[in-house]
Image (tube, rainbow over all chains, first blue to last red; front, side):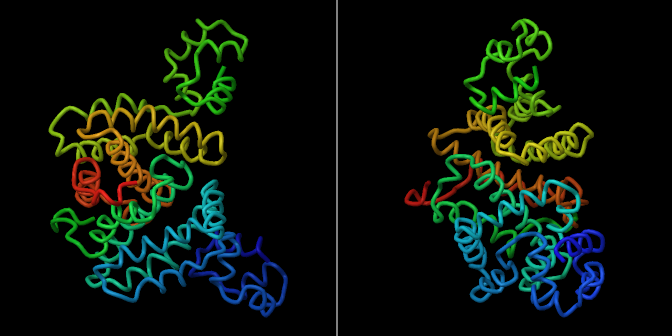
Amino acid sequence: MLAAARAEFAARGFDAVTLRRVAARARVDPAMVTHHFGSKSGLFRAALDVSLDPATEIAAVLPGPLDELAARLLGRLLVLWDSPAGAATIAAVRTALQDEDGTALLRDLLLSQVLRPLAAALPGPEAERRWRVELVASQVAGLLLTRYVLRLEPLASAGHPAVVTALGPTLQRYLTGPLAPASVEP
Amino acid sequence: MLAAARAEFAARGFDAVTLRRVAARARVDPAMVTHHFGSKSGLFRAALDVSLDPATEIAAVLPGPLDELAARLLGRLLVLWDSPAGAATIAAVRTALQDEDGTALLRDLLLSQVLRPLAAALPGPEAERRWRVELVASQVAGLLLTRYVLRLEPLASAGHPAVVTALGPTLQRYLTGPLAPASVEP
């Protein structure tokens, strides 16, 4: 079932995949897919071997003042990534980046489970919100790469407050701050 | 020679490797290593299959006002990465990240050829300068990952001015701006 799921997600993208179609490809009953993985999102994360549920984590940091969202988001990410489940997720991300199929799955996971829910919580026009959350992704992905994969020191050993103090204002500006004169919006 | 170089760099790190030792491992004359690769840095980049010379690129953006360094750096990076040599370098980076040896080589390349020269151009105490350039690395590495590897839209297709306007202030703050109260320095 996981092999069928990986093939379907890679070929069609998260939105177009149905549990029924994955079941058909795996030659099992659709009820069996639901029984084992609960939902399309659960199947997707199992296919990517990502043990954390990003949508749940995003939902957990959204409540609260919007002007402190960056600090909540970053604080939560650091706790997660420094946990055993986070280390497994980072390893899965690294594996996924090795080929185009895995990279496409990862992009879909990010867009559907993280960036869209985050964008939905921001004010403003949709195009601007999409731009803002991708800027956030660009800083967060780089923190993951430099702190946990490349393990650059002193960043790899820095305490959470130091990281939040340094990167928090960046993320908050991307989320809600002034970004650009209109002439250079993408 | 390249296999010997990869093994030496992975085992010892950039600083400890000598051309003589690589030649000995490859069972060739040291002059032959120099003839083919010019220098330890050239051999290192050949071992990683990185066609751009990061040290040269860094040296090219350092001259000029310090408070515009971020814009020069980011503008240059975007031109490089959007070039054929840049695409090859990004592919090499992606390959290097697949295993621990490649990741260690990449970390050494970043530290010795990019971050140290960049840190040397900044004012302030050494520990602070090292922290600042790693924050820069965290944003730049994430831009590479999201724009060129994950190809998140609209970021992947955004024009250079839009990217520089959005990320430039972040990098300039990391390079020369206020970062943190002293109590949360790492």
